[in-house]
Length: 252
Image (tube, rainbow, N blue to C red; front, side, top):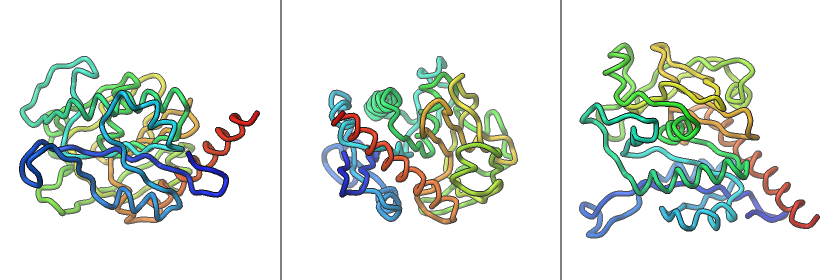
């Protein structure tokens, strides 16, 4: 937890891979820009390992969370469906940990930013559902998933006026990068849809009952635009305020 003289601490979740390739035992993975974007915007990023039993201790360390994307999919069982496409790739240990972490963070009103799979997890945990494979439901109106590692493709999104996302991004329309084959289909009663692509795919959600709980389908950690930077600056500021409230409550 941040102190009065330090920057706020932002917990960042990790992806994981089985043994093989890089190492002979299972290993964690994360693009560096998840970390560097937090640090560049005034926070101190720490990586969070997949240990559900340590969630209370990890929450106590953090002033905010970033739930990242990665090479995996949310289990359809979380929103009451069976797998309907061979494109699904599950990572049960990661999802079990992130679900526990997210639920604890919401219970503490910890500021939360969900990116790509992180947005999808927010939707599923709060009573929404996901499109398991975009081409199966939406078709090929718009390309959402890159074909090669390192490739960045883009499409426009429209952001709802009056939303938290609109306030922190500072724009109503934005060109965003895209790399996903799943998407949010619907949100639960505690969430709002705040951004869409031209083909209707949901690109932003938020939970207005919480101080700061924002999901985006694209990857603002690349800091390609002023809006991307605004998202991280707002998260860090919300973390700073959260840390201040927590310190005040601990001495009162």
